[in-house]
Image (cartoon, rainbow, N blue to C red; front, side):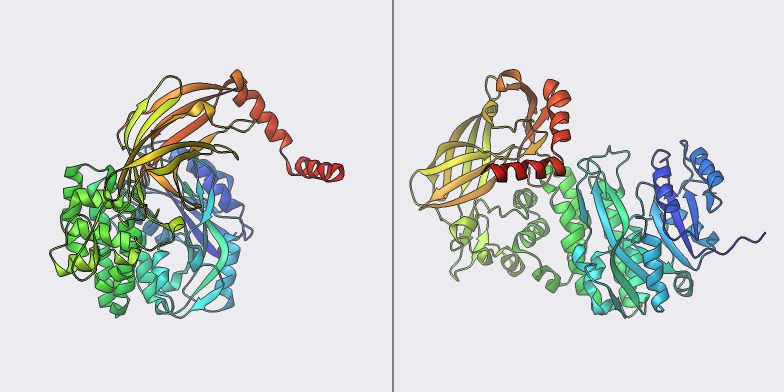
Length: 556
């Protein structure tokens, strides 16, 4: 009996992932287009993966199991070995910790059959494992169906560098001898850049074709490559791949894409490290600068000019060797957090920090005049609120020492009305206090908050909140985030809300990522967790809610 040629080969790469491999394979067996070949390519796992893979292959004759003779340490070799034995004219790739939606193969294959293209790509649905929250990866790039005749038609697509969101024509890969580079990480970035540049035509569809599970707090041993940014080797790998891409752009006649590619590196790759800078020690920062700065010096000035000013400031401080200042500027990126201080010169320009920068390049990059610190409407003004002291009291009381920086001198001289705002439910806890001036554009105050007074919903609250600092002036209000010390000890207290009817464990901790806000975590315990919340979930269903609304409208 002759086995029919499959339409599509989907390669599942796996290494020591016996627990999740069945889920990935099940998503392939459930595809609405059934004529597929499934190759499980095992990078020489040492757990139960081989036994699981063989069992799966025995259950479905569309599945083939390939085991590499030794571990390669990356994704490229298992993908390339699978391509060598793939029998279908179209190829896709899946990681063992992810899934394909049911219509993925059908939708991408239909795009290939509509017209001759080199690859088709679709939307990627990101799912956070810790919260279940879903989002679309680079949604603006896959919002509409379109066919492009070359990457120059939309260089923004360089941001969508995933190889797993695409179905490739085997003939296209073979014609250009396009394979994944072995022995390096971030292989997807080089492979995808090459595919974009070499393709004469490719189609984008808005349908979801990949489910990417994100584990932001995975243990170090199990963390994905992109979640190992704390390793300097990770930084070296990323920069090395960028240099390979730069060389390829020149060799392939696509040097005109360099500015767009540099912008992508600054906005995406470097930006990921920038948010981590406040949490790194001095030795790590020096090593990071040694690796990154020589490459930053090769990038297009026009790429820098396309960045938001706060990101340009962090980059320039790093390039100037002002590592502690770079850490300071990195806190609050993307959240409208002001510098502590700014300095003007005779030309009217305003610069980040206490001194006028020495070089022309530094003056250009550290010029924050375009932030309009002194003219923004009050509701969108930029301040910087830092916790300078955090003292636990009896029960769930906290005393916070707060310093507010107002570099644009938006606040009038004299004491300021302020309040700390916290909302673990629909109702807010508002604690007023006073900020007193201690210098030009600098105010300090103390506020005591009792977390036992936070107005929780009847069913309790399971989640995290970050208190805000609210300022009022002439009938207008401004709310800003509150930066916490990054090293204060975590503290947990049991709070018996409603006289013990809804107990919770409440933890106060530094955020540990992003700007490093003061973070408060509620966890229901006892009767709240085991009785009240399950009961409310049963009652809080759409039909019950609709019936309640109907009754309420009749009784009005």
